[in-house]
Image 1 (cartoon, rainbow, N blue to C red):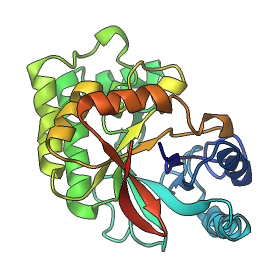
Image 2: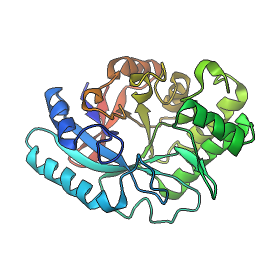
Image 3: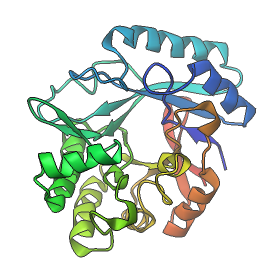
Length: 275
């Protein structure tokens, strides 16, 4: 399999190493291309985001690495951008970058943010404070925002499609086998089918010990394959040693779901490559 990864975070946001350390690790492991995708700035200035005043430095550093290692590996510059209701039309496209990952990480009101990708207690706060304990409403709103994000911005990649499950240990809040949950997922998959937007098949939850399946879950990947929705295989690495975390078992899951190809960037163009 051709090794690629387009979802990675460095110490420009919430990663743990300089971008060059990821490049060196990727070359050592035989990757043909990689892309950096720092969390784009929002109005909340959260600790895990790329600071607005550091964006120029980030773009310059990735450009430097592109040039320095051009004979060894293709390097791309992206951003992982949060969809928030009411954001301006240019918020996803104000920067001249190679690609965008669109994600939903949290909800917010006038006073606070309520996490999806957070610790367990914060997730409980999201359910019981923001959604008054209505789990179905929370799940429905999460997937509704994914649809609105694709409708408005058409990011090249949808980040960790079913991130909503990260704190759902032992199915204590919802069961993915229940009809109402699967209906919410299918609404999104059917909407994005044919739009050209790719799913981020993301191994990060497994590598960091939260999950035993990737994002999206195996059953959802089978439906996505049936709908011919293209995928990228990424590790959501926050450390250089995780750039290929759990790629082998998740590749088997993809093949079992019916996928024969993943999408890669080659000379700046998205194209299919055999798994």
